[in-house]
Length: 637
Image 1 (spheres, one colour):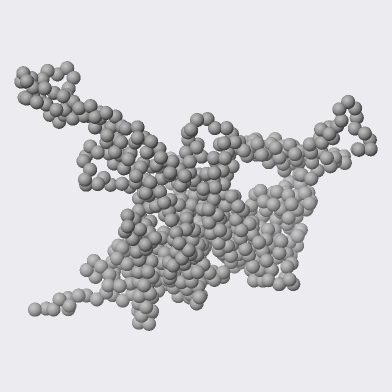
Image 2: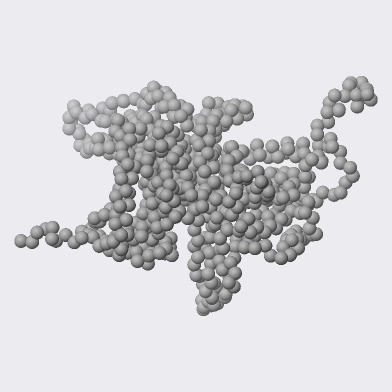
């Protein structure tokens, strides 16, 4: 008889080198420790007295957010199982108020020495322009919504900041014959993406060395996992060393499972990618289905873990993850569901009361009586229906009390734009809206602080990545060329910035830049009045190592004011600034036109005038203080 142990086929090795294989095995054991630590049950996350892991917590929160509510076995088919979407409505209402526009980062550049403060202001301005370009390219106004939504619905959002280049060959169509469908094309190389980027990291993919910290900056080591299709893996990691040697997970599978090195959730046609980040030792290791594809220093010069983390509400000062809004409203939501379903059941029974029959009556079944139908029965047979009444008024009072408690926990119906409690004055409505914002102010403050870390990572990535050539043409490195509209120029005007990054400043650069500005503006170049500013910077200037950068988010910059308030403020400001020499009349006129949804072309160029009146545009205080019955005494003028 053959021993069963001899029938077991060992799993194939991941790497040819025994040393590399052993290193992966050591890191796999370390990963399992991180996984066990993260997946532990936590008392803070309990539900009905049962401890939950962070994964269970997030799953329950997402289910509640999306009204996933299976009908219990003890309920009959006729009973209601409605899930009142009040939690989702509250979350969307809060989100619509605090994520209506992109957060505005404010950059601070600090020289490391008093002898190296030259051009600090200029660097701050240009770095801010480069960051703005990256944020626009990444569509941060949409990304902000997803990040805040994830944070509120799951309690925690984790972000990742890096860069990527997606160069591919495509067929450029020169001409098409519509009759035959014949096309003439040529193969060209395009960059589908060549910039820094940010993404949300699912909580189940992130494994910190400790969850018993309150700030991700205290985490110095972590793992991150990805499960990708083989094609997706080739798209993201195809250029890495040994990527061509990576096999699908099924190649290593023994008896429909894996001995080690690949998580069980990985399907046979997928690739399990494991990243290990070590900030202390400046090390990044990447394995794909156990095959080592990178082992070296972290590629980011800021030398920090490329992750940021934000929470909706704190749970404990020594706990990494936060409390979600669905979990916060869980108790009241469950009571609301139970009471609401009970009221519906009571109403249903009241409308479909049971029928009591005595004696023999033909064709009576399932409790239905049909109109105009003749029923035959015994002489003593009777039919009677019990009047069970309607829904008790006490139930409505209790339901209102529950909803009021949930509003105090999140946001009121009035602040959502839902009419309630009679008519409100403009002041009362404004107070309610400000109160709704104050309820979310803690979350907004946390998000602004975490976004400062996000943009700090991105700013350093921008400086590093933009200093590298995007491509090589005619044996010359080609660097980035950036165009930004509506930016503050060096002369203080608002206009167009054209930034060219290069290896060396060419000869006659000043003359060339003047010509470019004249071509763009269509008029002679005046450095004090021009609305076009071409700039050339070198990679060495960009990579100044004697400068520290800090990011601060402008408070409440993501809270968008109402259309009516915006127009009223624009009109009021124009009334004070009009004809005032301290304000650029063309700029404020265009701002007013934009606020009132009018084309900027309707604004004429200001004409040259005589000596400006310094009091123009200000309230006529002289008339207001003029004595009645005569002129103001000359000694008071």
